[in-house]
Length: 161
Image (tube, rainbow, N blue to C red; front, top):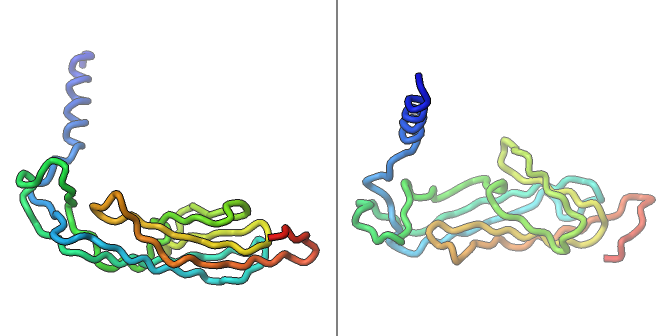
């Protein structure tokens, strides 16, 4: 096999790996909305004690099946409508902590799809969550903020928060 043959084979393999744009797709027929329900396994912990965060996402809105060619180029579409209820999506939600120092998220894959956070200093922290909304890049769903009080361990100095 010469260099030209290798390039042709590589190109054919690459093109076959690309999935063609589907003929039938789903486009929103009403404004998509998302409700994000979040909770923590504890709201009062000691420094270094892990807190497991949970999130449930409820997708609302109507989707209609249409021919892709009938949509405007910039119109949003999906291959399948989003699931109505997603029972555990904490690993697919953006989490932020205020104040931003003293908290560390474990981002390793967890089979239960939860997210774990550990606080390295005492104080009162607010954990906030945010999720994207299908076909609404300008908006985000937000869960209720979670307040977590982190106590110092015995023998540890207080940080003054």
